[in-house]
Amino acid sequence: MNQNIRLKIIDVCDQKIAQKGETVGLSFYAFFANKNDNPALLMEVATWWIEQERLDHFEKAVKIRKLVSAM
Image (cartoon, rainbow, N blue to C red; front, top):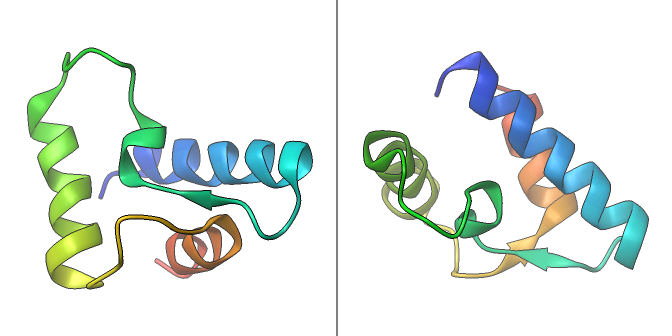
């Protein structure tokens, strides 16, 4: 994944954790607008989430932040 989406994922995770606590869960859709304005990037993140990392639909934001920070 490119640096911009990695930074956005980390930022969204940080925001959600600050708002709802360390147990908050997210899906990969949390990092995108409600409209599909960048299908290639959406598929890239979905492929990473589903095929590469084999994550469930909802995962803890702290786990996602840790995985993306390590990239």
